[in-house]
Amino acid sequence: MPENKFNGFMNYGIGIGLRSPHYDHILSRKPVVDWFEIISENFMIDGGRPLHILDQILEQYKVVQHGVSMYFGSAEKPNREHLRRLKELVKRTKTPWLTDHLCWGSVDGRYTHDLLPMPYTFEAARLTAQKVREVRDFLEVPIAVENVSSYAEFHVSEMTEWEFLNEVVERADCGVLLDVNNIYVSSRNHSFDPFTYVNSVPAERVAQIHIAGHSKFQKYILDTHDHPVIDPVWKLYERAIQRAGHTATLLEWDDSIPSFKEVHGEAMKANRFLADTTLAVAV
Amino acid sequence: MKLATLQRAVARAVMQPLTRSERMQRSAPGGGRMSSYAARFIKPNDRLTSFERLEIYNRQYWFRVLGGMAEDFPGLRAVLGGQRFESMCKAYLTECPSRSFTLRNLGAHLETWLRQNPSWIRDRRVLALDMVCLEWADIEAFDGQAKLPLRPEDLREIEVPNLRLGIQPYVQLLELHYPVDDLVLEVKHGDDTPDFASNAVHERRKRSKVRAVAKLEPAQIFLAVHRLDFSVYFRRIQPEEFLLLNALRSGKTIERAIELAFRTSSVPTADRAAFVQHSFQTWATLGWFCRPDEKVRGEKSHGKRE
Image (cartoon, rainbow over all chains, first blue to last red; front, side, top):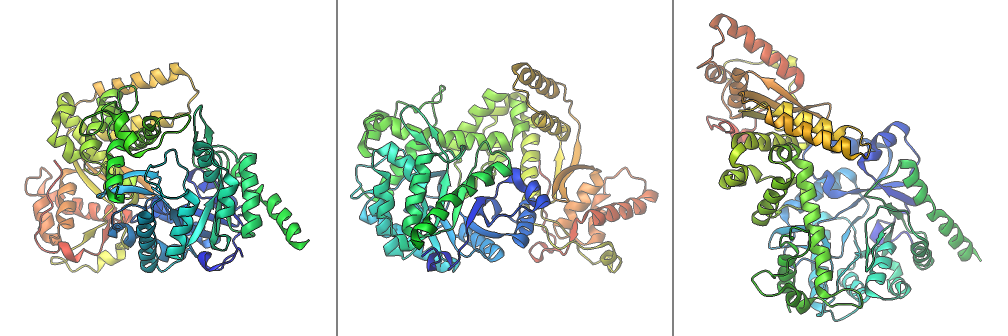
């Protein structure tokens, strides 16, 4: 189950996000890491240090691309320049699969640089799926869409978020990057049972899983990626891998980034759940 | 409501500037109350109103883009002062919102916009424009394209006078009216100094930046912003070098470029050959030469940045 057509039939283990404060450590110490996830947009440039670093990382590690601005859910056509540069990067990294968010963020060519929540309508599902197909056909690489954390819901929604996710991935025939932290954050902000969400995701389409930390405020939770993963999120992770199997897992830590050792150590905690699942499957 | 209509309505609210106290405005885009506007499409919950839920995104948007501008233009921030810089950025981003998939390009139109809206820089116009040019050049030099450099031995095979040379796309050539390279280095050095979480240290740094800006005297400089071993450097160059490099970049032959470079030069005629030889050797060592771009061959002039 973890190797499927949505992740290029790869079994990648546990990875972490490649972030600039760790470059020196990684290149000088060459720590053992299953794989790194890069933010595509940081490397969709013409030259310079970022690409030089990336090339060195690619010589030694497996890399998967994760995007933040394709905006599959925006009502407008994909940006041609974005696609051209993304394809160049795909050729460079040979990423076995590519991920971006199930959200919108641009209107009439203007970018908010945010991951805005979708209205869960059939029209939005149809348009989003069509765009995922177009992008996949152009890039010629499997695509998985990530559920985002959200702080608002729309009156026009005709279904739940997980029903919408199912609707999109079935129509697009694409994979799912299941972010269990985002499910937790949204479940608290919108008062739903996160396990209902995890149990509704089509397990056979899960290409990758994200784990992360977040920040709690008085009236809502914000997805800040600046803390360790909390126990309720680990429980969701455990449930996700019970259903989907040992899926490629990635820890995101994007703000107040601690040492490489601490970030990697946090990611490796996922192993205890993977081991438990192995035993459960064996029994 | 159609998807496109809904997204336009939400984006207008999200991208509307915050109040002075960094909250969402009470007035909606196009008039009316924002609370009614938000309630039209966003559900409230048991803890947050529609307004409050929309406000989370409105604040996130502005914190993100203003943070990006402050990161990219620390020198301009020092020139204008924190408050004016932030107000200016809000006005700029309201008129010129990002049209790129990457935040890297957020300030791409700032120089042009400031020229059209000089009231933001009225008492420091020239200094501020110099600083914007330099800080944008810094961004371009950091991740600009590098073509395969021509080696010194390649240059020996040159058949002067008809040969043309290209200049690496990442090399940015600037003519400036203030030594803003010194100022920006001072500002960046201050930001790199370890922070001891002390207000006193912060205040001293702030005062030091203000003093550095105040004491900066005008002085015409020519600068090549380039990179070496993947780090960006500011290299002061002579006016003749500036003219020569620009002429080569615009597709002039070497012979014609040299002619243009020395047209109003004070370098004695007897010293010019040595000057040119030394310049070419330096630039070749720095890897600035590359094959010329077919598109700029000929007499097209790029001119200087004013």
